[in-house]
Length: 279
Ligand code: F3S
Image 1 (tube, protein in one colour):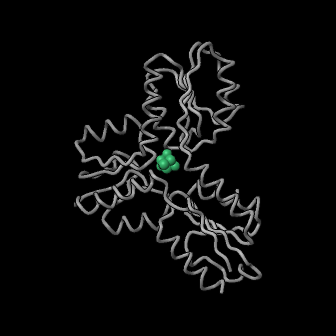
Image 2 (cartoon, rainbow, N blue to C red; image 1 turned 180 degrees about the horizontal axis):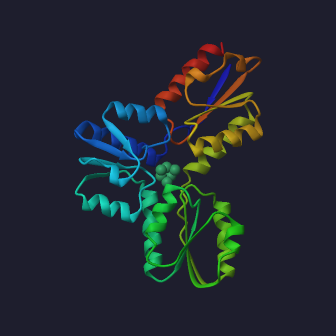
Image 3 (spheres, protein in one colour; image 1 turned 30 degrees about the vertical axis):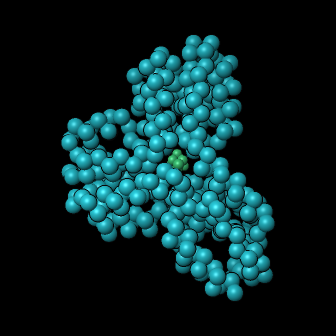
């Protein structure tokens, strides 16, 4: 049986950086927590808990000592509050997310109405929006929502880092019709599209596809959905123990990929188990 493992499987740059910073800080600080789970991997969050990193939901719940800010960042007010409380801040916000926050602030300060392309409920989006809150700011998820925007003299567009380029392009097209002056910052990070394109290619040449990652991870679920459309024999699993040997009947090629928040050790365990059950 042949196994094809996606080159892009697993941690993206920002998640790798955030988890390294979290483990380093855990080794140095006696009292430490993270504001929200550091990534959407229950297994990794458990490991960090074993190292003493408690997960808290709100700034008010931070008990003192050190606090880790996860890769999608926090709002400007939350950051201010953490600073005011004189906590030791381990800022693991992905530099690409920071850029989007800075552009939103710059556009707002320069008098543009900010249009943020993204999902309003997502913490990354709420963080970016907060940097433009000095002026007018709208969050739009798709073209239809952009069409409902009022006409404005000057519009500045930024995007949630995980948005697709096509969606940004469509929304920019609508904003162009609604403004006299339009400024666009392409803040999309290509980690998502690289993973998705590679997953599509692998699913097309496999008989069975395994997509590894937290069931609560949106990017892993999306990867699984993309693969399933191409190959119905696709399974989303969190760990190697969820593999059913029955899946391997008549299978010659197994494709494997993993979401951006899936730790390497979980991928290795899956590879090992596939090697055993697929014999
Ligand atoms: Fe950063 Fe892109 Fe990952 S924005 S957290 S490198 S998906």
